[in-house]
Image 1 (tube, helix red, strand yellow):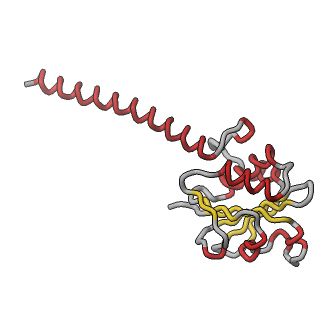
Image 2 (cartoon, helix red, strand yellow):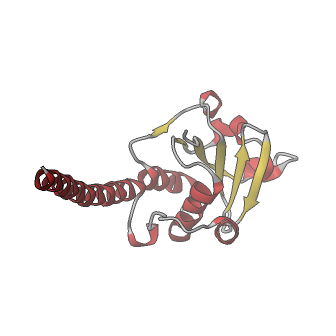
Image 3 (tube, rainbow, N blue to C red):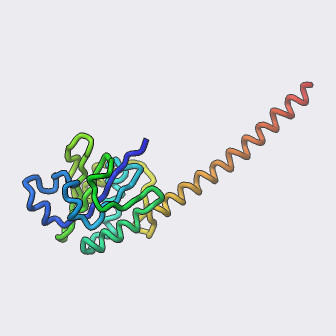
Length: 181
């Protein structure tokens, strides 16, 4: 099963107008978002939250519209889609990158439980949620699509090795059976 998620880039002035601030359910703000990007896989905070935080370390000095465009480029892969209205997308987590001031914040809202999971600066997301995973190396120019290709190639290489070992094993068994007859 996939952990579907959506990432939005919204000017923080809209959070300042709400009594809940950054913790508000962001789906109601989709018309204020520069991008509503749906990603079909790995939406839990330990992956997507850390991915966003890592990405922001190398991409935080842009206005909201430029940040959204770069985000869509760097996080695109085969199961990523852009939507005009976030309210019509079934997804578990909604991430918001709050722009408009020099200190960028990220919020994560659980749509299934209707609770705010966190409102943190990128470095706090990393310290709280980072695990031993093969995250995209945005700092060195890697994108989510590059990561998917790299992982796919890595598994293909491992499959080829296992396939050779299995064929050798089958031959050994065939030779053993032939020798015992």
